[in-house]
Length: 262
Image (cartoon, rainbow, N blue to C red; front, side, top):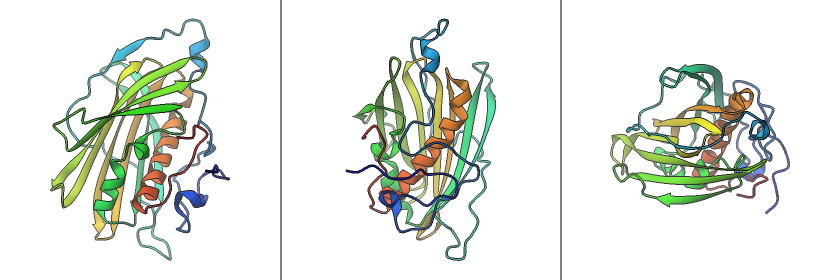
């Protein structure tokens, strides 16, 4: 399989392998990360003296509700579509009161021109969820949280200055309607075990129908890592990649390719 030939930047058309020949993706704020490479170096700080590295287990609170209210704008209607397949992003910083540390957050809102059942099917595919831009490998453990209709753990490995391993637990389920006929879908994920290079990693998706053939997708992501200066860029890059993967999977198109080959 050949690598995608161009970067995905604000206002740039989706690469053919991702979603041709549909309309271009538009983003609320610019993103200068190349599609095929990592958004920013992950482990630069790890090589410096004074960086205390270890492993930890993080409690994953129950539930499927969004992490917080979404502040991104909905994409504007275009001449060709009232609900275009586009995504807007908003990014900032906040403080985790329990941990007493600052983290970066990104919010995303976009539309998928497919029924909610198709989008649900895309959301529960681990390869759609995996941060394939940043990691070098991952393994899937299924049904790790039996209280939810769909759950799994992605055990991720990043090979950089040193090897970083961390587990991210995912859960999905209908929060309105039923699993067969959902009226709203909730998705939550969180780093639950692994390297302290990544201190905070948690996210949510709220998915609901706008019409019978259009589904709205709201995303929230929080992250804090040893390289705080790159966290905002990484959260934006991941939500952008996640949205593009959902589009491709929902439409039955190949997912974008990255340098990792995942």
